[in-house]
Image 1 (cartoon, rainbow, N blue to C red):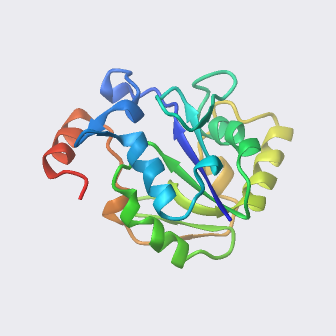
Image 2 (image 1 turned 180 degrees about the vertical axis):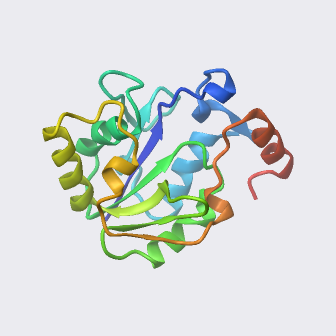
Length: 185
């Protein structure tokens, strides 16, 4: 069984601080595109947890304190996920539906994620136990607040695939406008 943890609590400074997950492309919010993709890849709706402030009907939590970073977001979502594997995804990758089957097909070791200029850890599929163990280590070493995702992922045996357009994150209004013109095909 696969679970999914979707981070939707960032500050979105380049978007003026609005919730990225609530931004719509082609009439569908980016968050809904990501969570729909998880369901299409076989994740049960009840095994998807959204961490952050974006609007959703799915299970939701917030890191404590709110907006304390992506590692803290992962830590907040972990108690709500079951299964041997979990997708960890950001809410601003609305094209990820095309990439999830590739992640499943290439899974091994502690996980797999897409790459490019750097590893895209928030576009990956991971061994749940490896993530839980690493989060527990970091929590016992001072906590997760303010830590980047790579603090969790870097020590693990993660296969990094080539860059994949389906994992392209949309961080600026220009990128969102361009994606809106092209649609979510």
